[in-house]
Length: 59
Image (cartoon, rainbow, N blue to C red):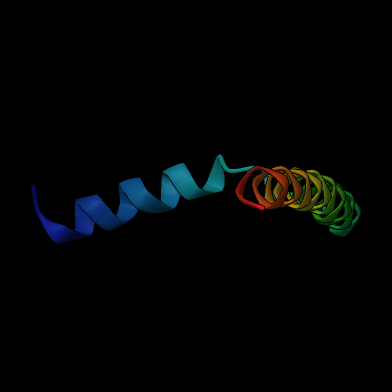
C-alpha cells in the first residue's frame, strides 16, 4: 500500500468524524469535574473512617 493512498484514506475517514461543539465539550468537562470531586470526597471520607477505626484498634 503506497503512502498517497494511505493519506487519502486517512483524510476520508477524518471527514466522517463528528467533532463536539464548544457547548458539548464544556458540558463534558463540568461533568468530569463533578464526578471526580464526588469520588475524591467519598474516598477521603472512607480514608478518614478507616484511619479512625485503626487508631481505636491500635490504641
